[in-house]
Image (cartoon, rainbow, N blue to C red):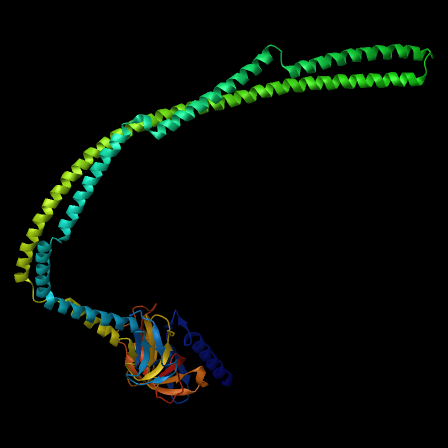
Length: 484
């Protein structure tokens, strides 16, 4: 019997470990029921996992985007409601407010001085007309004078352009053409002479080379005949070996001279060919230069004719400019008279003040932003999160303040256990961080609706706990709820 009881208790412990101490994606798994078999009665227990949270917690945000000038707390510090947590750099915002206030004051001043300014403008305009200092009339008179000067200059240049014989561009082009023509004729003569020598075989260098080759051929024939005769005598032992060697050397020298003469003739012929090619290339270049010079001369003459036409057009255009300037002067004098009439009307119709409501609203909005540069704690508690650092922009979440003395456990129970629990029931809280000490808590809230984001049907449950448990915000705990 004792062994059977031990086996039952072991099976119950295994079931609690498998079903009461696990979660899926952060949601509590179904609470396990543990039945303690005792001689007197049976106790059913619901177990679940939960997280320690603060009863009061506030996140503090900022959307100003201003740099953080000073942070006065660190994570873990205790703060009071209204205590300054951080101060943002408000220098630019204060300058902007000052600028807007200055703009508002300036607008008010401008509104008050509007009539005075209009009267001053009327007095100035009257004085300008009286003293002949009206800027528009002066500008029109200056434009008329400039147009008349341009017309006179165009006529002078036109008369000069008509004298083609003194046009420097044409004179220079003619000189270049004459030089190119002379150079082309000289090169043509050199090319003709070289071609004539080639065609008539009268090139002195080639003639000398051929004469030398003929002489070398005669000497070679003589040396070969001498060598043949001496060879017969040497074979008959009539002459000594030295005479034979001397004949061999003479034959070799004759052959070498003949080869040198042939090379000299080839070189002379090649030199003549290259000379003719060079002269032909030079002739083509000189011919191109001559044609270019002729083109340039034609272009210079055409340009001179175009200059004459252009200057004739300038005379016509500047004549129109003079007429337009005269019209503008007349219009400027008429406009001055109209301005006088308008200023007389503005003096009587000047507005007493401008509508400045938009500036006042803008200043009020910036003043509200200035108040937000001093960030204070909305509640008393512990700073559990200090996210930004000094010198960085204040955007998004900055601080989290939580009441570390008033804690609660947030857990969940499955739908089949929902009707077995009620607010006020005792719940035992166990945490590894506190040495598995069992803390007594009380169910303080049961959600009336299931969690729509959980993978299974479950209901959120809050459990209040005393302040002396040693539990801390964020700890994972196990909960046991005894059901009779």
